[in-house]
Amino acid sequence: MSTDVPSTPGEIVSTFVRRLESGLLTEALELLAPDCVYDNVPFGPIQGPEAVRATLAPFLAAFDTVEWRVAHQLESGSLASGTVLHERLDRFGATAPDGATEWLELAVAGVFEVRDHRISLWRDYFDRAPLLDWMASHG
Image (cartoon, rainbow, N blue to C red; front, side):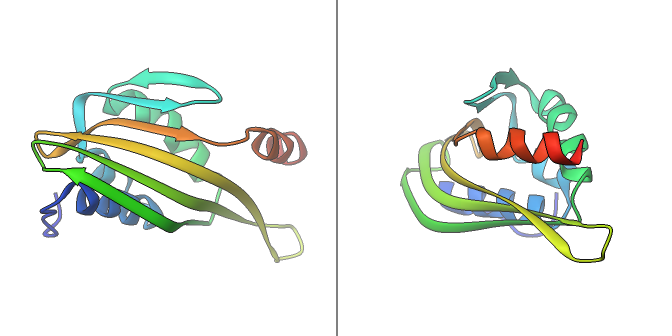
């Protein structure tokens, strides 16, 4: 794990987001509990860091830039047991044949539960239509 040591549930989630944005998937997964559930609501839940890796790695590899613009974040509890809610705009940039960056943008409401200093639940709610349209046109 890197040297940033989160001290609140919100800091754990913020560190997780920064690591994903920076392309540090392995380091981000270190913040997930071994039995964590990632419930990408439009598609259904998966369990465990390796399942999260298998889901995210090919998706993230399709993009040159990943930005999660968190507009609002609320937290309660402690590192032993806490909850973080946030509203964000997930932006994924890919270089088009003409050299311009094309963006996929998804408005997301996220729920994270923290247990024993790790994320035990990550649930995202968003409209999947823009994602499916992007996938169909960039297939």
